[in-house]
Length: 377
Image 1: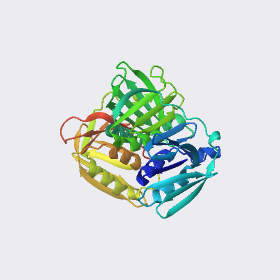
Image 2: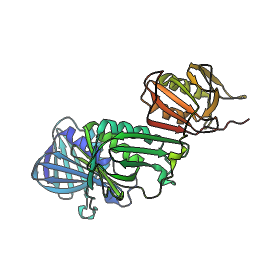
Image 3: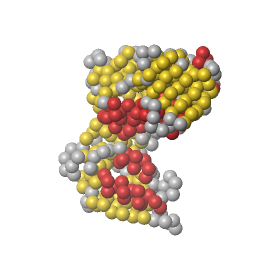
């Protein structure tokens, strides 16, 4: 194998493929990136850990075709640090020589024949706008659990119904739901897929700028066990999380007699300041009354902080407490000038939505439900 490729093209391609590398590969070859050079001028880079696969195709001047398997992380580090000149890769025996300008690296190869066969991309189910999908995934994944002992909750539930997709994630303390439109191949599609939040986040971030993303499912009738994404010569597949997702939609209250509207940016900054005195897992208290939101943290002999903000209140005064980081996660996901906090009572979950103006209706395409923290006394 012998080829030449532009430095930036190689660095971007290796970075994309290497994102799927396992941190602790069960077998040594899974730490590698597979390079396949085709004589028609295509260099294909692939990684696979039996659950998530990544593949990217880039143009290259291929002098001699062939396949080689090298350390993915090492190749990523090297390609990122090379000078801005064309890169030559040559297979010499059991080693690959990487040359770029005056820089020269020699990498050991791994046995290609031991590398597993990558899964093919399932049937394309439809396409999504990349920027909207990226924003939606970021809004929802903040609520996904990081606890690997509960794998179901580390996933994002994707509900596909006609031209609408609903994304849901929860860690039992908060719940995020975002609805968006897409262009399905079959207008009557109705299925559900549970995708690892981490995988979905990485795919959305790296493909979002490409304009349009094709989403594929192994069986759009029954959900299947594999999901895939494709854009701009980049392909990714992931096994779906197996199991029954809890029926979390029932947590949203049918109606909220009390709600308050406050500047999102002002509330974020106030929570950050007040939370400076909050010990780990200590809540921040919010009191809504007479057009004022009062925030407090700390009590007794500990450090204390308080702040007041203007707020529009509809309904009865209410005092409620939240985990400050969970509250900040929800507010940070809004992307709107104003936040609406809707309540039933102080011991029941609150719902945060965004509002474009101080007066008017909220945008319920994104909803963030947050469990309150019970205060002593």
